[in-house]
Image 1: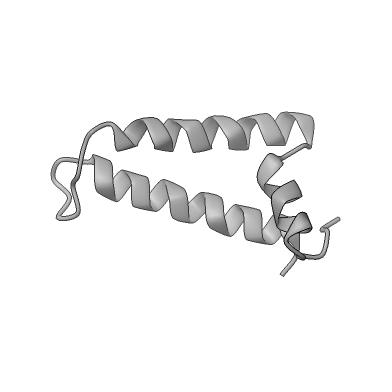
Image 2: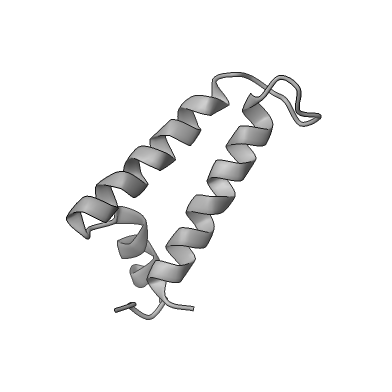
Length: 69
């Protein structure tokens, strides 16, 4: 997988987990404050879509993932 693919997989996983942990009706509920993490990931996805720069992608490349196009 390329760094941009890994970044999107990680972001999607973070969003789904933080929603499961933040929605009171969820069997995995921990705290409503997990929804702030969901918003943080969404804001970073928006920023990376507008600027074409993503910190997570840079981290993945430094960890050895091949760069994407």
